Length: 523
Image (cartoon, rainbow, N blue to C red):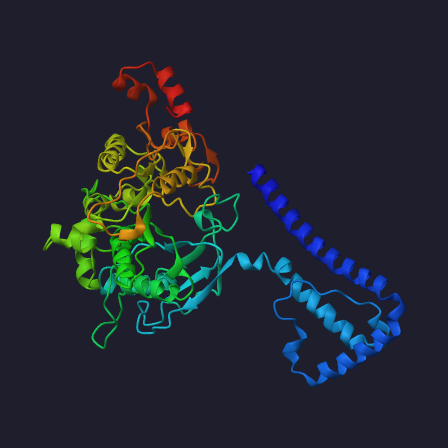
């Protein structure tokens, strides 16, 4: 973290030096002008007065020189014409504006959709935040997460408690990107200069719906249409000349990537933009349709088993799934909301980021880690969850799966710190990016087979932890006691969860001291 702070200060110093250099150029040119024109000050002064009279008759916008990068200051004009001197000062301030506004430009700004028929749940307009990077042909579109609702009761409750996830009426005018959305190269080394687009989640349908609000229905569910409309508007802002479009998302947004990445590619191809390479990055959206640890009635989003919630939701939303997956699961399209079932049917390349012990998965499976030590049955369930996730990820060529208990990663400020087998996630994504560079885009992004991602030497793509317990990876995010807020070591955490070192060592047929060493080292 200290090195990042140093890098930020260094970047600020560089910007300051650039501004000072620009100011020096201005002042130097004015001094040079004074030296050359020293003997002609009087005639020059008369000329300045004549120019001032012309400027007074001209429209105000002519005060700023079109396209000029610098404005020499003529100090000899000050005595005879203060107004004209102030015009030059104003021009200088405008030329230096990019230096003073650089920090503000890092924010993404809000744009509501021009097509007002594509809305959030409550009928307010959908929208997106954007930070353009004019020189870049890389675009990153991020889908926000935030669970879902699946019937009138759960949606009414969601509207009362989480209205910002169902309405755009109180969205802020700007957002600051973090993690892979950060414009700072020290936080985001490979994507910092891309065109950044953040699409807020306000459809509560896992980005799948295409149903408008009517007199008979209380809510609209238009997540899939919002994505299409955002893409349409971005085509007028430079996406039409893009080389790469990375559709990314976390949690429900991660599942939304799996449901929409092929649709985005097909839409661009149908509009004639075959050269744009569409890729997906799904973070914490690879859920399992497994049985709950303890059965519970489907009364709300948290207690409802994943399969039951999605079965109800897809009917309520009028949810859409990729056509190839729909054909593979006719009549049971809910299967397409689960990563390991939809992924084999996709044509676009997708990178999967998934914690092996995802907190959201454990929550819907009725494993609640609320400060009470877990008992042996829960502990075995947690371990089995990690094993099951490993199995479903076995045939995914490009993925990053740390053995941590957490949820969401790619927009976290610490996303560079997590490693699997000594490789960080940004590094793995860079390797994946390089492996796809040789794809021939002349035939579009939608061939009948998914492009093969061949790893390069020293650049692995299939990164998954082999250690079997939560937080056995030493680079996992910091664990804090939920009651005291104090940091916990891995061993303290495992004991807190009811992990019996002696008993587990006996089951594994090893010395307890060796097991403790493994836990400390993350092996």
